[in-house]
Length: 183
Image (cartoon, rainbow, N blue to C red; front, side, top):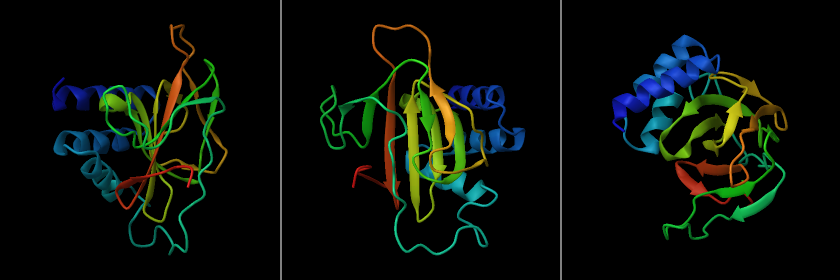
C-alpha cells in the first residue's frame, strides 16, 4: 500500500472516529511527509496545539508511571522474539472481545487512526518526552487533542468474532527509543 493511500485511509478513519478535521489534516500531512515512526511522532508533536511547545508541558522530574491498558494474558513481552525473529519493542496482551481499554498514563492524544502494521493506533504524549503507542484491534473513543487522565476509558477491543482473541499492543517510547513498559 502506498504512503498516499495510507494517508487517505488514516484521514478517513480519523474523520469516522470524530476527530477534528484540522487534526485529521495535520496527521495526513505528517503521514505523507514522513517515513519513520520517529519522524511521524515528531511531526505530530510539532503540530499539536499544546504538546511539546512553549507554554505546554512543564519540566519533568521523572518519567510517568505506566499501567496496563487492559486486563488479560500477556502473550509477548518487551524484548521477546516475534514470529519474524525480531525483538518486540512493546508488550502484547490478549484480552476479551469488547474489553474496555484505559489510559496507561495521563497525556494528550496526538494521533488516533490506522497506521501501518500497528493497525488502529493511538499515540499519546505522556509528557517528559514519553510517548505511548497503543495498537491492535482497538476501537478508540478519544480523538486528537483530547487530554486524558490515567485510567480513563479511551476505547474498547473489537467485538468481531475471530479464531484468536483480540490482542492489544503497548509500546512506550522515551526520547524516541522503545523502553520496557514494565520498568
